Length: 376
Image (tube, rainbow, N blue to C red; front, side):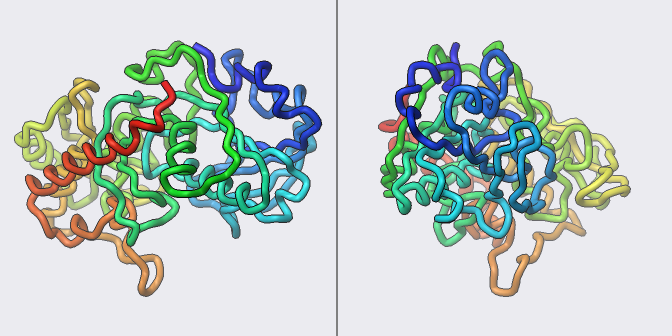
């Protein structure tokens, strides 16, 4: 198969005589392992780089803000889209004719890169610039879907449009969806892949895996990310600060064997919960022994990540000591509400069976919406 950036030669006419900006990070490489920065610096007039969360060279931890700087390897200016502004300003785009993106998405509503893209598309519409997407695979396949549709009352940078958590789309397909369905209406050009099989996970494609962010080391992380990321909004560790982020879930107040037994008794599809202890080196409960489970996916085909995560939360919240984190600022929403895109989980409004009904209904509804924007 060929990635979008592998097809640059077929689309060089788009860039003739144009000043080019690029949103990217270390995942932006072609099939020969050359960075997209290097490829575009060689083939077009690359005048600016734009950094999402974690930086264009991947040297920044989650949540850390960046300032404007100069890329040492190319001498090209780098503007931060994860600092005081998350949307390219007029000044940033004044010397750019075309803004491109080449970045590996995680296949999740939570992942900030897709909203960096959406904000950039909106800025290109406002300032009359062309926007180009070099497409890449959805790492957890482009077929399986799971999740609830985001309620816009809980819109944030980890969920900006009414999509589901596991959306089954590539970053270019999402660009088409955002542009038309949610009325960004920018001058959008897709540079597609060739030969991608929607049914395959990234580790079945014969491509080099590059971690899209510091706490996303493997494809298996992505398999579980849509399940366990919701624990970010609680006082339960989602495994940050361990070698297996999002695979381990626990807290000092949890008995591992008791939790594993309760979760395994639910009969969830394609998953096994193994009791264990772990001690995070940073993030929540740093240096403190936690009891919890490792989430083992036995069958990717059967595994339903959002169903699994909501079931885990439903059980774990019964432990004395569990808390939903308070809002970051007075009058704001809670992180768990941003993660789940609703408040009925935070407020324990529905039984687990009713939650599953909502997931099934919303997944079917989103499947209908997304169908017209699929490229492959």
